[in-house]
Image (cartoon, rainbow, N blue to C red; front, side, top):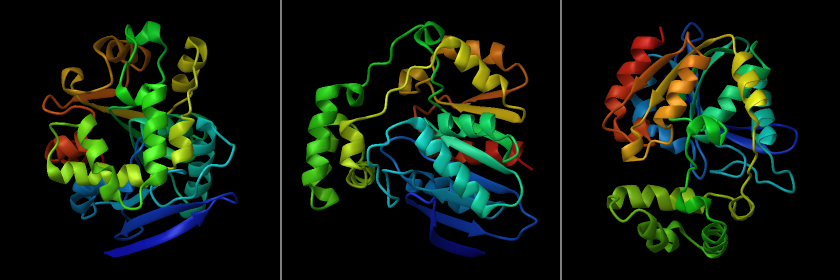
Length: 276
């Protein structure tokens, strides 16, 4: 296996990319992480899956080691960045695996550029479903404006990830020391400007439906449990099943919002079973 670390330039910023490459005959899996995270969120699954697939992980703009935002704040920036990366790295269609915000980015790429994607795996994704679909309004600490302004200031002033540990513990009081260390590192690598001015885009129901209707590849949803922190409500799941009747849904009952970390063995088994 060849392990490659490099930056792919979009013409605007450099995107940090890590690849585990077996051979051109193997299927290409491209993993897209969620907000305030990095490509490292996939480490528990890529170590095993890299024995069976060509693996590509990357840091979204404003996170990890990729370039930062300027005044361009929209989901389209992330979507367009990744389209350019896919065009530069691959000659054939790939399988996109997106977690949380990464799920929404992967969804839009598959909708806008079906020539790039032959399978979509959405891991407890942010679907951008309107409130009437979810039948609830998500309220999480990181959505609070004052909370984010405070965290932005702490990220800006931090000299090392250790400076953010006490703040991380406040938000995740039951997390293990190892998890706190990982989360503090991810916050440290987050663009403080992005955190301060976090993107919020409301999608109306017609546009929401059209985005998913434009996807012509197979879709697999791997969902966490709402009571444990999963962000896809039962109402939202039911709606998505009706909207996408040919899609598959797999629930990880012992997992919350991060199935690839909380129940990585079952996550790996499902990927291997569904993707040949």
